[in-house]
Image 1 (cartoon, one colour):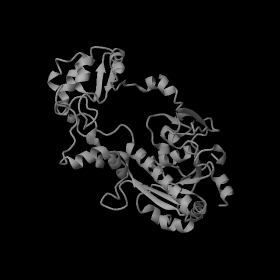
Image 2: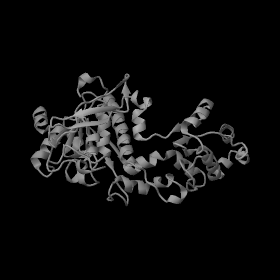
Image 3: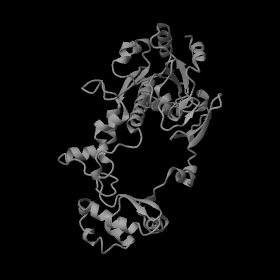
Image 4: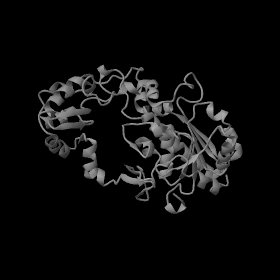
Length: 387
């Protein structure tokens, strides 16, 4: 990407010293907005996520997750134990706009690349740090890993049915949310720098991102006597919302039904008699949540999804078929968004992956370069920046 792309961050240089997911997700968002991302990697193995496998699929010697999160970035191989390489890195930081790092607290200080020392090199730099649990407190030295952060955040008690125990999300939400929050902070700091000329230190953590993610339900908890969340025992979809909110099996798949007044739904489903006891006081839609949902589920199971959509959608009931990935990919709603792209590399690597979720001036950014080989751009970067 360069200044000719027309994207908002074109011309900005981001030095990404992070690895795994949270920091690289942050720099991915910035890259899709036009920034040039230079990924700092160890010469002997590079980013550890190169070997973080979600399946047994490997492409060009690296995992699919590495390819997904590092597309179109440049790789600059730096031995952080070599003073010459560290000097080259400092020279690069002197000319960069953004630095992202997610080392465990204390490591970046030992490298001599903490904010205060880097600020002395480049006062205009926006320096971003992502940790597991912040910079102080009893969990600082604990591994900042997604499942462990979810475990400490309380979020697992919002998923699944009441009798299941804690249920983690099926993907690395702490990493992705922390990366997104960090990108927001970086963008705000860049705006301020445009006004004052001064850089900033942006900090967040996996735990802080997960706490913020729960702001609605945590606010309820903090102001209703601190009662713990109670999930439905039957087809739970939200720990705090009343029936009918949930996912129900139809004869040929699953149907999601969101917030709907029980009397209106009862009439459409032909359940006026069965749900008559719950058609008055809305409070019963929560207190009798499991009983109501069991009655609805029994009725939904008698017909196909299309049958029910033909009844519910014209009545403005918020509902949807629960799609599998193949069904999503074949849907017109997905195709019209044009969310997929193919990225390639000279060693015959070809990856079909996602595109940016953002459109700027009606255009969604597209790239064609796959994730880099370790140190693929080192020589070019040294020559360009005089390192």
